[in-house]
Length: 91
Image (cartoon, rainbow, N blue to C red; front, side, top):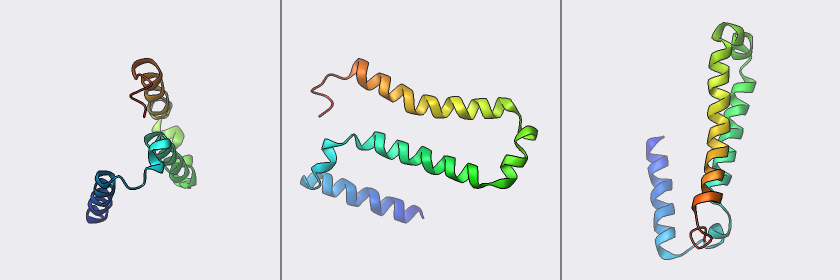
């Protein structure tokens, strides 16, 4: 699995260096990938019936930590992008 990740990274790096796939620059790719990651993490957690049954055993504190981590992962980069990056940096 590690080799697959490294190969995908290298292919993306090489395509970026050659200027290919310029359409990806029009989208905020990091945000799209982050949203997809959070979606699939939520899907995995939601489909695990044992986890749902054991949620009271795990504790509400763990649930709150996970919830705030998700919110922070989605919200803080958006705030950073809007407040600290110039419009010229977003391109």
